[in-house]
Length: 244
Image (cartoon, rainbow, N blue to C red; front, side, top):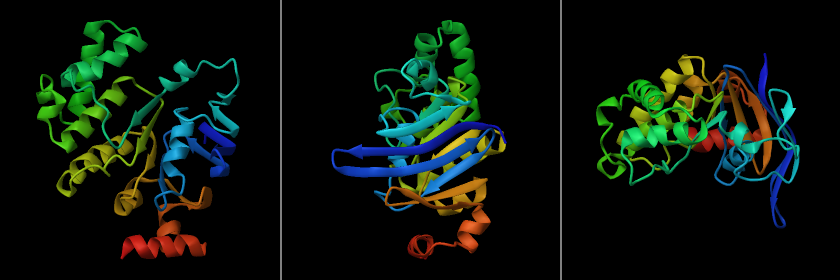
């Protein structure tokens, strides 16, 4: 399988506090990888290092075979290839739904307004939000905001979509609508890297599950293997806690 992202010996410290320790891990083209683990295990930090919102302390991140941590690499060009969906939506509250999905395309990808709107509408339709193009974020529910945030990331037509616990800020009844959209995206062949605490969802959509514990990858494998026959005690303990 062609590796899109290949993380080698990645480490990240904040002062004396080592959050990520010698992480080796990759995402193949068209693969859906879910990262699970307790709060504070380093999952979100790993995602933030991959899209360089945090600068790794050591190691390499290869994107299509090139180390993006090399000095000569254009970080901004690389970032346009990664769509990021955050816990807190991060929409522009003063712009309507359509403009939220066109602004990055126009500014960063230099698309014309017409082209950007066409692309935005296509993806707003995919997430079921095309009827809300004139609404401002404050008029939307949490689930609707997150679906707009997904459409915004898709509108940049990235190579990889990163999701950082996309349902953790949502009321329980809104979680389903966001997970449904993500399941459809997974079926479409999109390369996705998802930090999630929704175990059933992880089991349904992933090709591979990565279990992180205390800043290391403790175990990884297929959903069947991780959920039904975990090898590590730490994985067993974690799953016993979250699956009861």
